[in-house]
Length: 417
Ligand SMILES: *[C@@H]1O[C@H](CO)[C@@H](O)[C@H](O)[C@H]1NC(C)=O
Ligand SMILES: *[C@@H]1O[C@H](CO)[C@@H](O)[C@H](O)[C@H]1NC(C)=O
Ligand SMILES: *[C@@H]1O[C@H](CO)[C@@H](O)[C@H](O)[C@H]1NC(C)=O
Image (cartoon, rainbow, N blue to C red; front, side, top):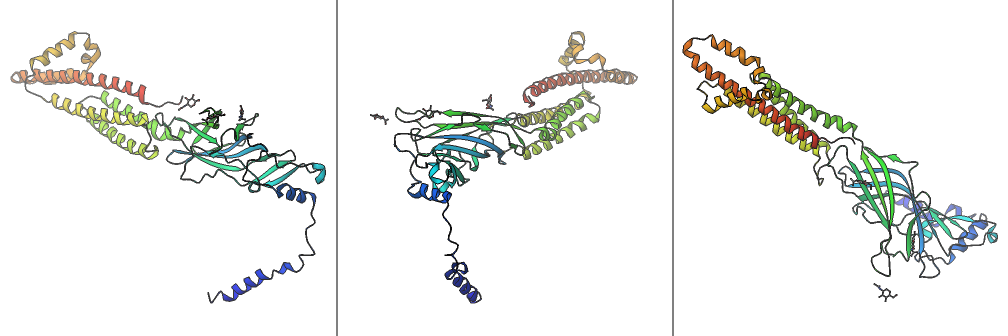
């Protein structure tokens, strides 16, 4: 305080004796017509009251949105629309005769000096400040026509449906109207011509505006009063190319890896290695999708279900492969039902389905084993039975898993319609 003492004294001195006060009497503003008009028009004006001469008549407010920009917040529950909102109404008290004021037929008045309609956003995000009133300069004509074009950002709540993510289309709706006045007091309507203008619109990050639909809800709830609302529905499509490259294509590739490894021979270790690699890839994919999918949504993106189910299938394939590997190493005689099954498959039409006869490795193995001494002939035959059985099972597994995958792919791959 001590340090600033002299400075404070100086400031106080100038406040008390402004330097420009000396010659203020000389430059006293000449009252020109615009100034006189401004003073006269606002002299007895009460900006709190609706500008009508008869309290039973309505102020009709015409609204036009010129959209500039639109964005979603990161959790994708809130949509923010930036727009120039043109509001137009008739003010019964802002009228004058132009000839009295040097033929001025329109003036600019600050919006806080006159009555303005409070246009509330009903589904606003209450955590962000959305004031019903606005501050701007308005244009007033001598007939009392007032036009204000405030630049406003409205943040509304919009529930997203992420089922077809990342190819989803969202409908976000904003409802506007008067918070407390009835339609018989303040009647919000659209401009007759072009109620929504998209000429200067810029798409926000990650979204493309497809269409805007505007509708006036009459809001007739009881006999005497209406509560009209202006409803704007924004149809937005996610810009999906990047997300498809990150998520959709790799998921499909993982599915193909699992299927391809099932085509490999059970004896081939590559099969197990590929399957384990695919399982690891599935884990990586789920965590990758977890990063980019907006969490806490009401419905699950189907691509997530695809990866989850494919992970389960891959795990099943690993188990089946291990079981088949151990079956092939069996030396105890095969039970009668296995031999019956093998015979049935090899004679029935099933042999074409499971391709038993076309597996060359079985024949080769059988030949090598048949060169062995006679004493082991019995165990050789049983080993060959087991191998046949394993082949049947393997082919059956492949067909079943292929079938499951076809169903899964048909239902769970989001497509860009
Ligand atoms: C969005 O609205 C359009 C037109 O009103 C409709 O055809 C479409 O099904 C809606 N989409 C969603 C996801 O609600
Ligand atoms: C409000 O405006 C609509 C047309 O935009 C009209 O149909 C309705 O009668 C008006 N309501 C009142 C009370 O003036
Ligand atoms: C509607 O107005 C009539 C008179 O015009 C009155 O008798 C009636 O009670 C009012 N109804 C409501 C719901 O305000």
